[in-house]
Image 1 (cartoon, helix red, strand yellow):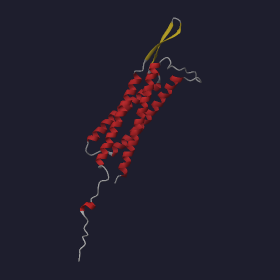
Image 2 (image 1 turned 180 degrees about the horizontal axis):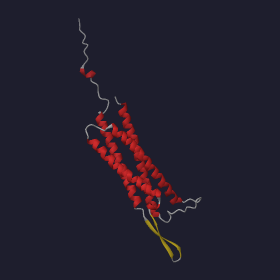
Image 3 (image 1 turned 90 degrees about the vertical axis):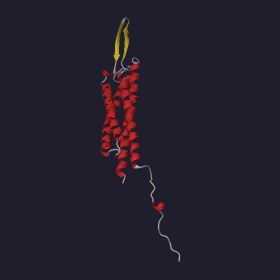
Image 4 (image 1 turned 60 degrees about the horizontal axis):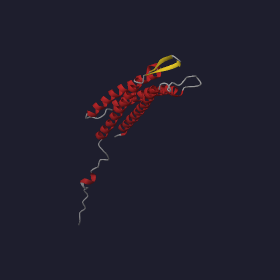
Length: 199
């Protein structure tokens, strides 16, 4: 009479990992977070520098023998002042949160859920501030380029080309900062959702 072996081989019961370890995934997430915050810092810093250095002096001739030097600088518009202030805050914020992310990355325990939640709230708040500043500066800049015939506001960029080029580049860099903040909010929400749904 033959005996049937009912024991299961050890290799059949060993579960294979379905993906990289959780700690490895968390470190990749932190690297992405630090990279985005560095991009935010670089874009905001360059935007502030370009806007602050946009001063231009032009001598306008009104009549033969009558010339008046006119100066165009960002402090002449409240929208541009708010723009510089908002991006300066974004620059400082990116440094602080970037350092915190690096410290968490060096810590063996992984990223704190509480810290990630704070990042989501602060990133969303700063996104609103930077986006509002970009829109305000963009509106003033558009009037500078095109003018407004209905309100008799004359365009100035045909006289102050260098100034207008500077603030156009600065607004473009601010758009990059806004997009980076949006990506940070989305990424933090994604990481939090993964932590909530993980067993």
